[in-house]
Image (cartoon, rainbow, N blue to C red; front, side, top):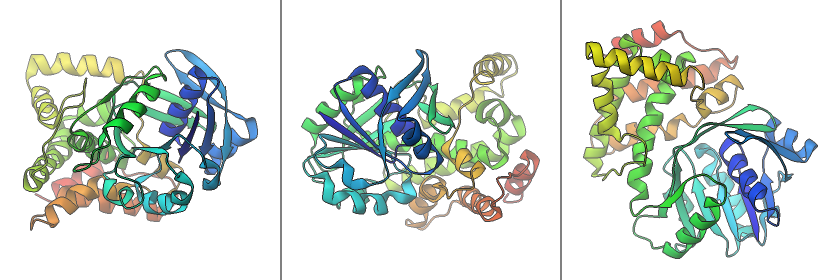
Length: 346
């Protein structure tokens, strides 16, 4: 069997590497660019760090999409802003392969233009993986990966095949009848997480657990997410092991309760100070690369704008990220400055 990964960054390298580690007979091709791709290509391996310790897995790495020819399964893990360019370049070489998209953005409309309806599998992962140094990927937070068909299309057989194969990584992978609802639930968490990246803050301990940030930034952003989903008639589905949008809002409110809030904060600090969640947006800004902010917070803006509403808080996150991109020096705002700019919208 041949598996190829298009856009082998943190997620693609981890899934692809674990597949190869647990299935040595598998032919694996990683399509990757940048420093991470160069490091893997030069060493001929990818380092995978997780509860297992460290695996150094032999891999073939290329920057040529044509190398995915004759694949049985293609993992599509490119950044959302590169979706159309990447799928256009790869489409002539996909043949009859099952294509599994695991991305932060909601990109099925683009992919469905190029992939057969019974071969396209949409995915969402609640794992958090990070390229801590070129050539090595760390599993920061384990969680379920959910697969399903594009809304209105039936790829049940492809979903089952993909789930069976990806489970061999040792990570939890499950089919779901409403993968779009799961994706939008995860998107709301990323909306908040990407806002924490504006000040390079630890998402849990320095953002969510910080009362001024929670009140001025997190809750307004979450309100806009809920308003956007209601306006668009999106039926949300819960991510196994992760609170849904409404559950997360309840959690934020419980943090305000004196005794209970103190206990929750202490537990969260103990866990996430040790191993913080690392968002791809933060890594892209640090490395002075273009980000996918228009497909995360920008998706909430789009959903409401198309229905005659607005999302000023999410629009502000988009604006501020583009300001950091324009700086091009890998610097960030202070947390106080972020809070002040959000307060100014009231």
